[in-house]
Image (cartoon, rainbow, N blue to C red; front, side):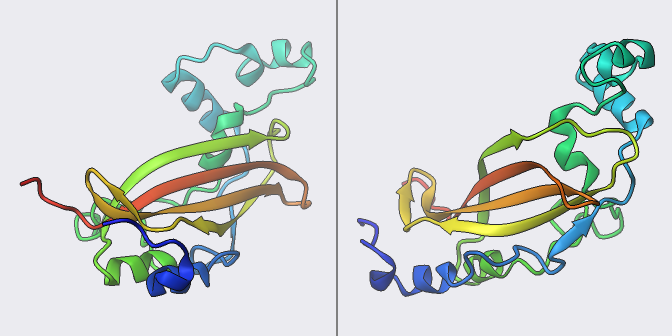
Length: 188
């Protein structure tokens, strides 16, 4: 079955695209629970075996172009992650937090496109974060593709973009995240 040509041929797509430009979750802007801090940077650098001294060595960082300790750029998302809630994690399909409020995803689930496959994520880094900065993030639905027929079933690629700013409003980076919400088809 060929995918519909455009939203006018696919009533579900038209309903999904009404959400483009709107917040993906309930909260709108999220404020990081903790400021950028040395212990989290140290753990990140150790976990990824990243020996860059500007992340953990105050003397080396002071002598660098930054003049002080900075956070690894790809920690951007880390600072705004909610504290995990273990109770009920199995009932949430392994999600460490209550996810509700993503209307576009709820709509797809209700229409039978309940399976999720992460497709890709891209980061744009404007500048490194410094110790003590408090990050804010806002995630908006960027796009929904036409229905695609894939080997695992028909579905829609859903893309959202998160803009990260400091508590003073300076944009420090952006993350685009894309998933496939699909209706699983059994081979046969």
